[in-house]
Image 1: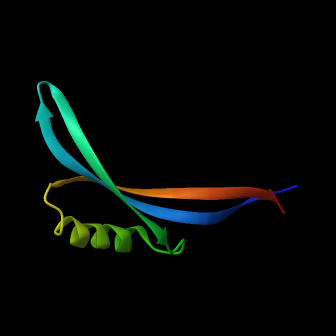
Image 2 (image 1 turned 90 degrees about the vertical axis):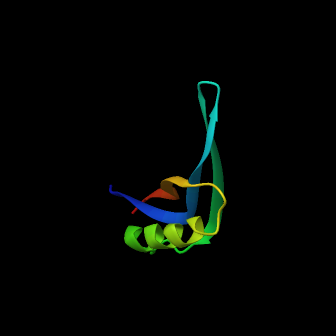
Image 3 (image 1 turned 180 degrees about the vertical axis):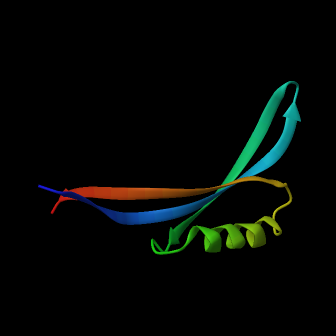
Length: 73
């Protein structure tokens, strides 16, 4: 019996560099939901770059967050 995965939702997360407080790195994040599950990583990265230009803090990481449902075939 095979198990297949079905992408239920995808979100785009931008992690922004909030600077240092003492010796701690501060990270702020913005999450954009309702991303098409079929969106390619390259497309998401380009969009993240465009969105980062609208932020006041510099971009440190781009993350793709996926929720996947596993079911038997």
